Image 1 (cartoon, rainbow, N blue to C red):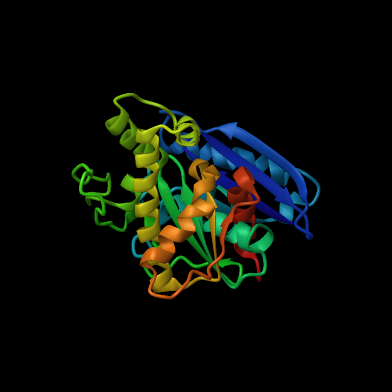
Image 2: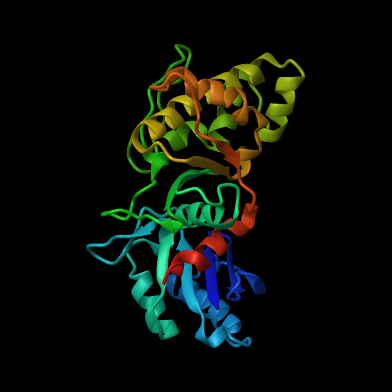
Length: 301
């Protein structure tokens, strides 16, 4: 039996899987807002306790996906957009609270693991998962297992800086990480919406902007053109370094159909190869990917 926990900014989701990875039970509770680190710790513990009380749950392994990562030298959380976790020994505190060893990984790594184990890239040896949402994240699965790297930051693709390929582009925005022009500041949903607002003089959501492309809205077409150019450069750089067997897209912007056709052309235009062969896949597990990936962090043990 396996327990997976997806610790998000607004919700904590847990799942209990049987030996065949079938769902036995799921639970979801709100992440305590403004109540502090200890309240979050207790909320996670409460979800696990509920799942462990179910038949077979008491002997289950436990994996937890979090925003950010655990600094291997200090044991403290870093690089988390849930800032209340930063600087705390979450891994050790959860082990003490739960009374057993657990595994903790970045939520994007859990996404990649899930899609490599049972999703769009099932059976692929090297899978990179890209999350294009409110922020931009990346995770890496090797042979179906999370690869976190020496510093615990493997896959942090969203914080690689891009150059501007558009002479009309605004100055690079400053990312919360301290750099300018990060992938996250170009390819997140809010970045796409802000670019359209700059061009059109009015604000619209990402889905509406994409509908306006089909309706002949020039500003929408321009915003999409710029988005695809940044996307092509960013993904091509990723392929140059990693050359994965598949790339799986998640997050709200992964529903953008242009990413799978024109986006592939944008990648190929700057790729150090005559043609793009890497499958660019839309996720199959959706919101479930993170919690399943967390449960599978013990895969192979």
